[in-house]
Image (cartoon, rainbow, N blue to C red; front, side, top):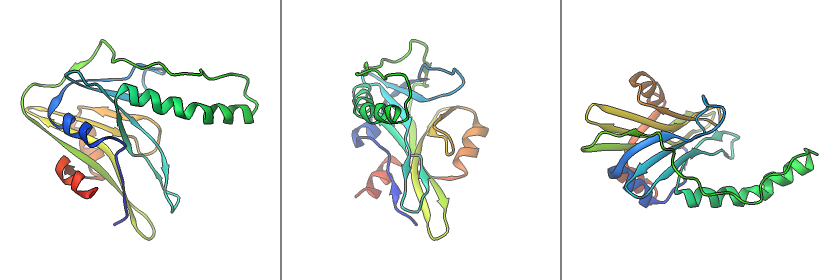
Length: 189
């Protein structure tokens, strides 16, 4: 098996999500049909789930999942602004990006996650390649009493997948292995 492309997050965020999810919502944005990020809300500690792209040594485009606080998310975007602005300038585009990023806050229209015990698995997409298999930590799968929720990166676009539809969840999971938070953290050691 190939190396694991890790989730981009602090281990504490995974532990908190594994037991404290209360609400979730797609991030507001345009176009409305595109889910660019997902809010995962816990008491007092919102997390923004988003995707990123990593080009691996064999050319594979991995789409790992990021989990950041709003402050971490804004800081990451602000750090990337000069590089993106430089690309636009280099290609003679006639517009400027903002010089700073405001810290986001969750939308007012959120979906309640059912109260009670639940489990959370990290989904790892396994992509067979010519000489190895790439393993990319790409999603979270929440399973509660009578409810299931998928938050993951789309394998071929910069969009996110957010669904409670069993058929969509099953189709996504068919390309992944599911591990518990403890199993995932043990892989990182």
